[in-house]
Length: 295
Image 1 (cartoon, rainbow, N blue to C red):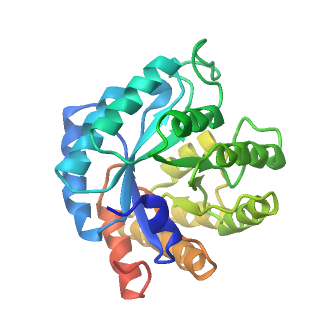
Image 2 (image 1 turned 90 degrees about the vertical axis):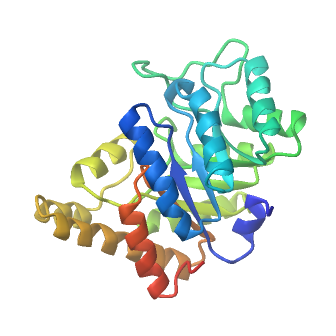
């Protein structure tokens, strides 16, 4: 099986999707339906998140296994530092290893629900760079993805500081970067340029979320401190209450984002699909018709 980092760096323009562990019977059914439906896209890999504060750590492993073994995806599970000692993290990584996973997305992680800020476990790691270094030292066979923030991490004072923190993760052994969502491609291109200037030369995969509703866009962008372009805000506002108009805005915006990203050198696209298949399928059909991201 081809390693994810090799696929991203191959020049073929990778397509990847992100799932999250469900927490209800309805959500389980939704994930199962989306997993089946999205197989036809033939994504190069999928990821599955870990949850705030490591709240879904056991289900992450369970559903990562289902995505890999039942639906035959190449899977990159997320792993965070939150709430874990080094010993606990070691055991979790051993579990991923024993289940045949080859790639991990190493993140510091968000604070548990209700916690005002991140607090490291007294016997754990405070930074993702430390987790990356530990995996590379103890489990060198794993390849590692890390997160990047085109509009800077919400806790970073400056973009320069944030990029230096990113470089620590790469220097510790990370193989590629997947970015937080953004809706203006200029943020991504400026970010890549800034990363290259400090010696970060690994692939930087843009992460995108289809803007299916203004309320959802505003909520996610507020959380990660990303800009909502006024053009997008206005278009979604005007389409409010009209499902077809909203669908057209969402697909048009993301199609144009991806088209520009690929034409200007992005190695691929990582879609945050929120365990839903409808928009991703429609978007992929349109992209394929235009000769973009054809599998």
